[in-house]
Length: 336
Image (cartoon, rainbow, N blue to C red; front, side):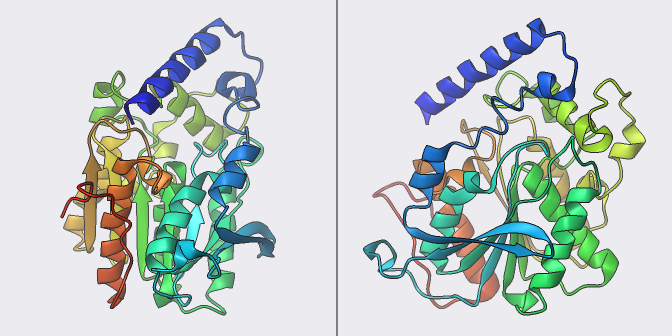
């Protein structure tokens, strides 16, 4: 973890220096999307999905990927089988980048513990499309899935911008009167696009992977598309489906929150947890120290993310009242 944090700091510094030298002509120049945010690493895909059965399909005209445990492998020998549980995964990437495979370590780790299946949504990215295009796609996929799958056997999960879209999905489900999923998972959610939280300023130097400038540009791209010079219209960002911390959580299902205290988006999660308390929504907050943004999605790759994943698995067990789960534990690494 220490080495990874150092590498992330170095990468962040290079990106910031590069941006300062640019004379941008488009949002792509500013975000350096072509080289960084949309660099779908083939090696990452191959390694992460090694023990899973991966298939592609289209749901509600949106490309999706299904991940299933490969029960023929020894890897899943201690895993209880709960194929009736379906996790819907929404990847992060600041609304402008990212890809479904980046969450495969997390998907693998959860499937190993629970024995569930996963559908990941390859929603459209900004700046080609702007709000509410992506969230409408995700709602349509969910609406189609529940035609053949019981909502009370569904988990919706996402990290960073995907955490935003996860909470926004729950708010939209409530607005439309659709049946709720059993629970939600929000890992380091980018939940307040006004970027006016305490940690957004206080943690600028301690966050090893994100910068305030980067997030501000991503937020503008999500709302305004390629018009990166448009003014920061705070009111537009206060729409609860844009910034879920301005929503009413009454009636939402249980939610598991994971966040690192060092990151810019720490306060986003704290605000969401406070709303859960006010609205009497069952929830659990797991915080980590000296990690990095959305570390939960690394599953069993790091000891710290492994501990967080075990905490999540136990929460899922509690919510679904499962008799058995598998906890992947290194001696002395699990916190009880």
